[in-house]
Length: 307
Ligand SMILES: *Cc1c(COP(=O)(O)O)cnc(C)c1O
Image 1 (cartoon, protein in one colour):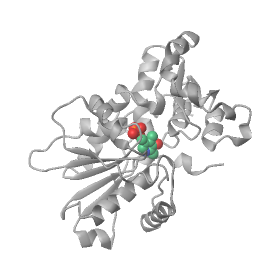
Image 2 (cartoon, protein in one colour):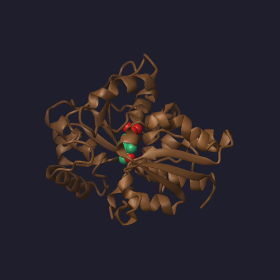
Image 3 (cartoon, helix red, strand yellow):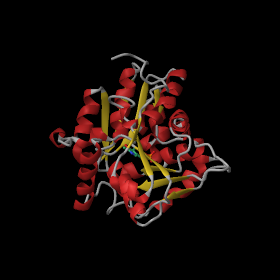
Image 4 (cartoon, protein in one colour):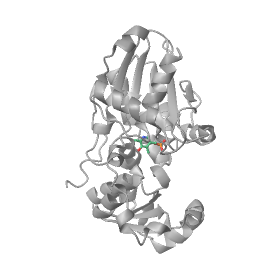
């Protein structure tokens, strides 16, 4: 693999127009920002979130990236690859100690992370919940490690979305709606923070939390945005489809239908729910004629191949 070459900010990804009689009927134009194509292994938003963190780790002469996640975490998979490409080692603190002795039950994500050199430590769910209390202990135990929070979400991660927003602005300066899936909210915060405000064209940024009760993310998102003059934004909290990683039949059907119509694969955890939310908003007449809607593909396809 080529060291240090792929984590630059200039991987431009295409903005594709989605052609459908339904969109004509509503008089809107719909695009997908194919950001899952930005890196072969660290797809989509996890790449933007890691980029500046990796640079910071190198600047601080750290030799390891240490982070946290569940067995299906796209961020765990991404961190292992990013570290390896930069010539660093990586450590993953994984939720669920029951997996430690049963490598056969590991998800593809964990197997792949290990293959990419990540050293995995499994801890109990109770301990994982209190992981912030472990930080000083981890710093002592691994002084050479640059510690990245769960999901890769911190202020440098948020800042990582500036080049993406610049690309979108160049590719479609008159967009009116931007849809993105939401986990921790760092991605959404970055989009909101760096989307230019245009006086004469109202635009809206819509986040679709994939967990139940997504409203709780609002204060943290506001803290990350740290700006007053931003476009209107909203969390659409009713499209979690039962909760994190819950994938009811209607979601699968819609995912398949979308994939077959446009030849673009989605992941069931994040991007399928974002697309679902968009269609529901459209059917509820929440998107006015002449709107130019951008659906952000945040990646996550590595999680599609489970075991
Ligand atoms: C992690 C992830 C998200 C959520 O990103 P946050 O910054 O945590 O909100 C969205 N889409 C995909 C594909 C992801 O892997």
